[in-house]
Length: 212
Image 1 (cartoon, helix red, strand yellow):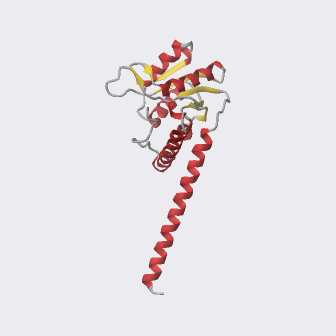
Image 2 (cartoon, helix red, strand yellow; image 1 turned 120 degrees about the horizontal axis):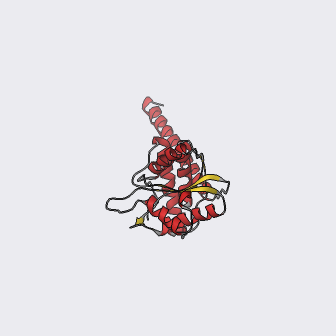
Image 3 (cartoon, one colour; image 1 turned 45 degrees about the vertical axis):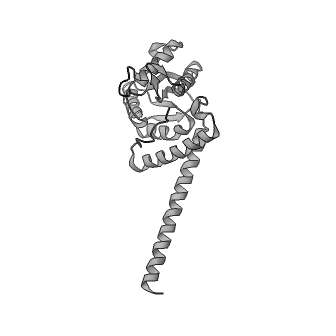
């Protein structure tokens, strides 16, 4: 066998090995996204962290309202002591997502001193970082993450990386969990976003949060 043939074979084997590794990692990540999406851990936590979604002049979108309603039920069932609403504002908005969430919860009977509004963050990581700072200031250490099912693993991973002891209780209602096609779309999307986060510890701006 000539040197050129040996080199060609080596390159082919290396490429095949690399492709196999990528497929294994991607498949494993997809399985974990799906697996954690099915978790609904009702272990008592200091706080429920509601990840932000769109709001319209102070009125939560259907996606955000579904998350808030789930967190409200967790509070009423004594699963959490506080509800944290998160999310900043888009250009031109009069309200932050966190503010809209707080108003929604208080209008539905959650005591004002049990809602912690954090109107910061334009992506999941930014919101989680802001939550971690406030939580540490108030000696809150445990958090149940409330978002859509497929978003749960990435959000929990980010919370743990920020020093929180976190688990997940996703909402099972809202536009993002209605059809099988929608579910498959978000599983693929979150798989790529989680792999990117593991690699660079940064959000993917184009795919970071569940679109409304």
